[in-house]
Image 1 (cartoon, protein in one colour):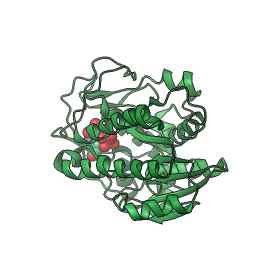
Image 2 (cartoon, helix red, strand yellow):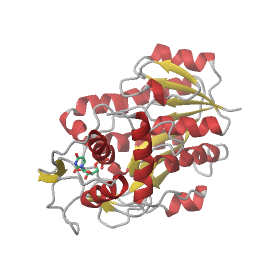
Image 3 (cartoon, protein in one colour):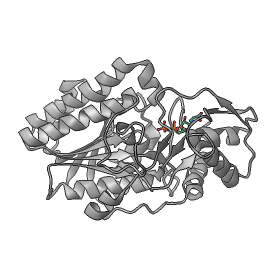
Image 4 (cartoon, rainbow, N blue to C red):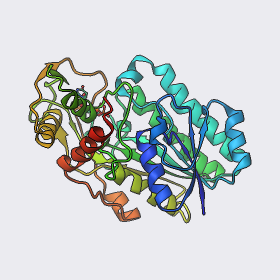
Length: 328
Ligand code: UDP
């Protein structure tokens, strides 16, 4: 069976993808420096605890195992942090990624799935956002993803690297079997933050970042897509790379429905049966008002359709996992 290297496979999305691949019979190696990864998120495969900046460790992995393909998650992914610390983002997300591609070239590994983001689009000119939408990131995080996509496109033309870049909208939810879930430290994402305070019985006011956006209730709108649906898309992308029609493709991954921050808060109240007090704070730098995906392209090309297209159901899986693991 095919051997796949999953960088960042101990992280939130990486671990769900790793689990999906293991269930499909893939042999996997998880390459993670464990800066944001979590041992309990590893449900199988082999773990190599190392950094992508460490070329010796990377080379060792490729020289020992016959890796057929790489799925690359490792990187930083927080919008606010990327604005405060752009250097770390360019180094980790771009330079370390280039290092990985360099070692892949040395070992002639030519299949690559990239964890990209809707943040490459910036403020949308037209909704829903399709892959044809111009790219103009409003934050450093999105820019690092866009730069790396351009690298992949060039490497496709010059070196024959076959890659698929998956532009996630807002990944949410947890493994429906309750084995793994979202476990960032510190947590900054909307849904886990809301759920954690309900679990803790925290009655202080939740901070909503701005209500002056051009949306019906003034709060930001995002398209929440279940992490298991994302995982399935990676498996489909890997299969497509066996006989790629194009050497470089980008696909949006979202459900096509947007929910405002206030709507998400209300959904968390419904799922948990708790009331959540809130206050409006200053907007977060770099946050676009609305991000909603057009996902026809991946449906047409790879047959992907999101199975969890109901926000309450997505939140319910995260709530189940959190209660079970009591990660607060
Ligand atoms: N958000 C908020 N309060 C928080 C965390 C997030 O109002 O404590 C908002 C954030 O400004 C954004 C939305 O919730 O509009 C989703 O944020 P998240 O960090 O979950 O994902 P992002 O869109 O940054 O990838």
